Image 1 (cartoon, rainbow, N blue to C red):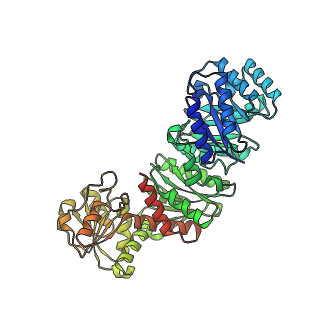
Image 2: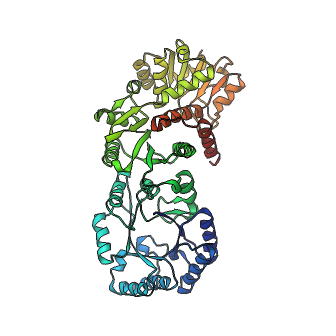
Image 3: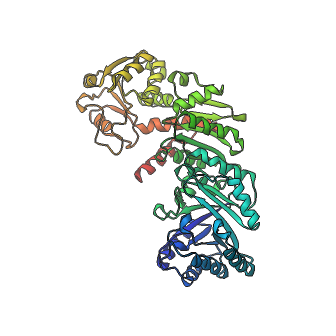
Length: 521
């Protein structure tokens, strides 16, 4: 079983009391009393803190007492002797666990003091912890064995910093290859995924803060995120994993919408943000790590900037299936992992755009033939939409600031090209913005002059934050029909959800989830 522990990291007893109340209301399963955060630390203040924690809970709730050494992340540089006395007194005060640094425990004096206190109260367990705030441990497996050799009844706690998501796999392997009570995960943005799937891999504890300001370690999630967005209460060893591969990834709304749909369908599936930094080499290493570990149960990925080309190249190298038009586009945004690690690659962007266009116009894809289309931009989104519309027979003209890039895209798909300066004079039935102009926070910007908007146009903006850009507002004022970026984003996500699960997602739920997320800022 994996417990959700919430650190109580307050400067004084009053603040600790409020934090304890908030943690209990949010669903904490263990309270970690970080006594090194207390001002003017004394044995009496710790005894009072433990009493507060015990009395606050309506039913017995396990308590960990920690007085972290400043060298291993402690908030205040309290003397070693005081920290040792605090841990011994915490045992006598009836806490369920004490967390002591393994390196410090090697001291004969401290070891004798702790063992003597534990001998008088057999119900209290010892956690022996090691932290590396810079990188991986030199030998995490050896360190795990060393801890159990020194104290076989201890719970090893091994926490290190992942400088890349590929650093996490060593932690996953350790959890896979051991049993019993142990705590293993990674710190930092690249290690975030290890905190979320700790329950799947049976780490004894994972930690979450009351709020972002109360975090006690890099990359620590809030209880709301872990229990709400990532549905940690429903995770178990059989949970199938999915995720979005991106850099950056923190802004992505994909985890919110896919997890909402998994929950809606009652599926034992979890969608993760996967920060894969670097280029082709790092991307390939990540997927190789995934395929090598079939027991992690990763079944599919959304892929976005900057890895769409890398994903295509990887699947080619592995002789996987590639959707024909995705190969023509030169990028994929969806990977499905089959048995034995067999990969299939798709691009749902173009289909999402075409579906949004045809449904708004009330036509079929066949009716797109010879439709005059003006596309602003020549990046990845533009490429997918150009490929889809070209395949449908539309007459496309691309407008782009960088002439060489625009000409290259136009030549590749046998389209017309014009420099951005010609845009105000465009005559078209369908205008599509594939740039980031107008995206939050620059919401007063628009890629197209208001005077050029006409009521017989359909105006499509692929920007989805805000949902109604200035371009779309002005298009509506001109009497034109509009398509917002949410429509395309949701359509591509629905197509991915279908590929991941072989069932239909909930479009209304996705839109509501996105709007709720955007409204929170």
